[in-house]
Length: 82
Image: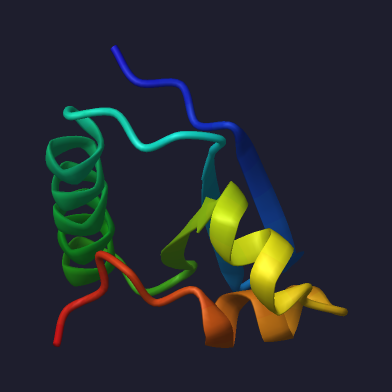
């Protein structure tokens, strides 16, 4: 089972799943790959709501100090497709 840290409803058409970590464990890359795949899958089978995700690590948060959720989404791209 997976329970995300936060689910942010930006609008009726967009939901973002937010995963936060103070320290990155060995299982984080696998969890994030599965979350990315889940978002791809759910977006492929329906088009009413777009699902996205973001991984926020403590070091990056302290370094970049995002001032809005949009800057957080644009700045934290680890585990996104290249």
